[in-house]
Structures are given as C-alpha cells and as structure tokens.
Length: 263
Image (cartoon, rainbow, N blue to C red; front, side):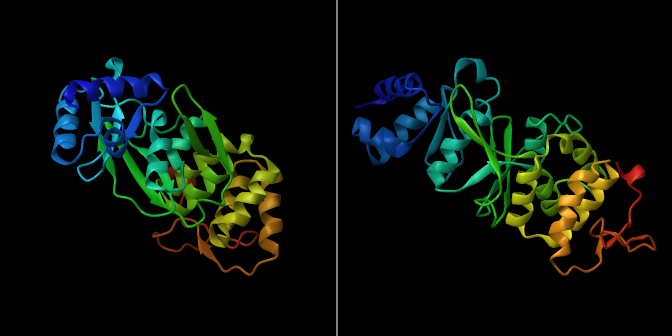
C-alpha cells in the first residue's frame, strides 16, 4: 500500500476521534514496513497534514487545516496520547496549569509538563514543551479534563503551587502572585494530600509563609499542623539569594527578598 492510502488512513484516524498516532499503527494497518513506511510518512508530512514530534520519535500528530499555520494542533489535543505512548505518567503543571486555573499574570512561551522521568524539550511548529522531573508525579493530586479530542491531566491548584516552589519556573515574588491567584481555589483535603505526597518540608515552610502573606491564614494553618509533626531548619525564602537579618520564626523562614519589589 502506498502514500495515498496512508493519507486515507490518517483521515480515518482523525474521524475516529484522535489527532495522533504512532508509526507502528500505520505499519499494522497498511502492511508498509521499513523504508517504504518512512517514505510514505515523510511524503505525507511534507504536505503539512501530519508532524513528527522529533527526529527520533515515531509519534506523529495530525494537523487539521485550521492549525497548519501553527504547525501543530493545541498541545491539549494530543499530549495525553503522547505520554501514554511513552509510558510516562505526567500532568500539565507549573505556570501552564496556573493559566488553566485562571491566573493571567504570565504570558509564558512554552507548555510546562511534569513527568516522572526527565525528557528533552520538544518543539513542534510554534509549540514548545518543557519537561520537569518529579518522583512524586503519581502521588500528587491532579484533575482529569476532557476536551474535544482528548483528555488531559492537570495539576490541581494545590499541586501547582507546591511544584512552583520546588521546581522554580519563576522567582518567589511571582510565586506569591500565583498564591494570591490560586489560594481561593484551594481545598483543605487536597492541600493536605499534596503536602503529604510531596514530603517537601522546606517548601511547605515557604508555602505557609506565602499563604499568610496572601491573607489565607486558614490554609496556612493546615500547613502549620503538618509542619508541627516534623523537624525543620531555617530555610531561605528565595534560594540562591544572600541571607538576611529578617527571620520569620513562625515558619522558620529567612525572608531574604523584598516581596513587594520582587513581584
């Protein structure tokens, strides 16, 4: 079976409700193999109808006409399928998740994804994916959202803030802005689950401090109860910055940055 039949099969896959496929699926459904398969996929990719995720990948996304100028459909239409293809647990996280949850402070130029194993950044069309590694990815609270083409795992607001503090896609001043944006959406049970799953005492201290600063003493108290059962040392509010004389004894945090100026 040759090129035109591959094009028809790609249309059929889209009609089935997917915007992605692996080369192995085309091989099974057409009988093409080896060089013949590569040539057929290359020719179809040259039309802009499909795009290969990376040179070494055998995973393709289908690019409907309305997305041809972008070079790929929105990442939420195929990310879940791609991570399943890799066998990688994941969730859309950090600043990308903050945007999903309504924070509009940052116009980020990449999609930030948290995975169990580190992956190289990917660029497909105008879309850039950056991956952050976390051993707790399968334990942290997430939401499953259903879109037109696919489902998507997104970190909850509670998980999002803890990851921002630990993985540092932005400075502590901007993290405070995110806390102010998202803390109103916190749920007590999910916050307790997220803190316990992360097991990250230093960043729980920072989170408690920021929650109080943002006027959410109720949520800060939940963090404090978790910390009271664990030994903890003094931690800098902003890592990598010089120590300061201002020490918040309640949270054992060295306030080494002017939050008003850093935001």
